[in-house]
Length: 227
Length: 64
Image 1 (cartoon, rainbow over the protein chains, first blue to last red):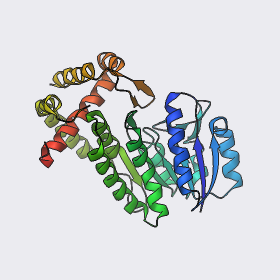
Image 2 (cartoon, rainbow over the protein chains, first blue to last red):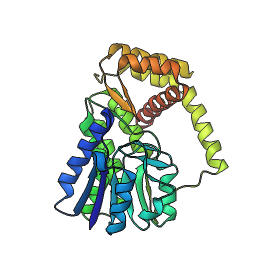
Image 3 (spheres, rainbow over the protein chains, first blue to last red):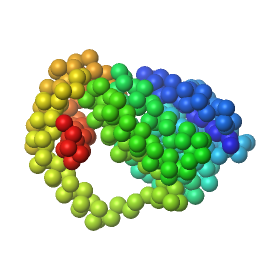
Image 4 (cartoon, chains in turn blue, green):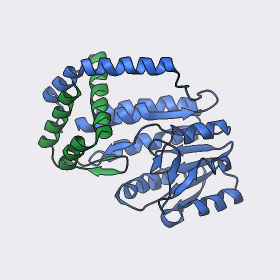
């Protein structure tokens, strides 16, 4: 199995995510062959040149993203809807924000498997290792022999376990948020269509949340979890 | 009602001013979180939603 790993580093947050990426590569390099495009090499031209010359199975991208793109070291898109066809039939594994919304769905249409997030990826610095563990979990499960669908379920469990281990209330809240934002798009787990009925249900849940917010306030004030 | 949640988040960050966290491409601490909460409606909605969802899950699971 051959993996292409892309990890820019151009500001503070990418200096965190590149460490997560490096740790992941360290943990999987005995099982797979990894070609890395890091920092200045993590740009569109280098990506396109590398993927055209090699037959990769999995593309890993850490860090920033938007709904329709993954952002490179020069702050331009490394991957977007114009070149996503280069990943046809491959797996795209990312912790980038929001990319499940559009880019992931486009990739799925190209017979690709997508692993990523449909909201912002959020983490606390003090308990960063818990977020890193969850972000890196999926691909490691697959390399242990699990299917992507099984790896997704096990990663959700990993998030739940991390929530229990977390000391900070703010960490627990955002581990849950990231857990719920994780998306796997595969043949057995296709993207859900956002039909009008779904939107109506979402609106009702939102109203219910607003009505129940007194409970959340009570919890915030009375929690014994030290932050 | 969401204003009550915002006040609770502000109170939380007043108690934990040095809590550093990352939201998308933003690096935040207590002071900058409170400032952003007041200025950015999308950010505010996202935080309120996350806090309520977390509390609801605890409520449903019967956790203290």
